[in-house]
Image 1 (cartoon, rainbow, N blue to C red):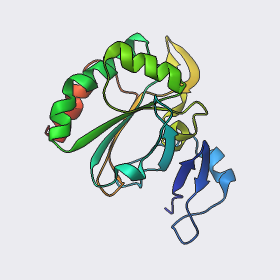
Image 2: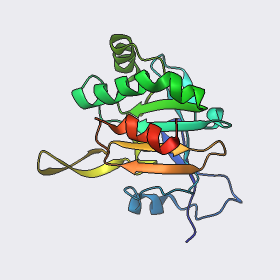
Image 3: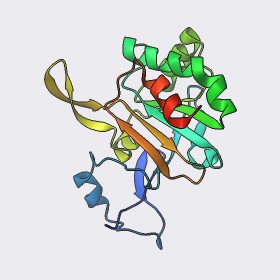
Image 4: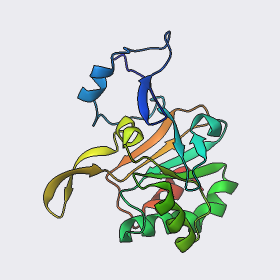
Length: 187
């Protein structure tokens, strides 16, 4: 199957430059909003503001493995648990050559408060238009308290040093997730 590689820049999803594999018809993306990434897929590149408003791109992290995790909202119980667990394992992950990056639809100011309150030292990125979330299949229909709603699907991706998806986890539970990742990565 030919797949389109999408880039997200300045809050917009755009196909990669001509000459890459896949179609460049943006209307196709609307039909694939909830399509999930699989191991071996090229991780969609992006540039998003961090908690301080500075731009961070996935391309700037090439050369290292990256854990890119998507969470619904800063300062909520599950998202706080997951983020604090990542912080608690950060030294071991970094020693194993892994960089951790969190992404949510929260604005940078809220992310800054979250970072300070919880003592988080890894990048937290803001995707208020949910374009990056959609590019990763981490936004769509999900069950919440027995009802079907549309929102952020708690997801984590391990991206290899070359920018390809090594592992993709969708609908993860906040509790125990970081421990499972560490086991899977041997870190």
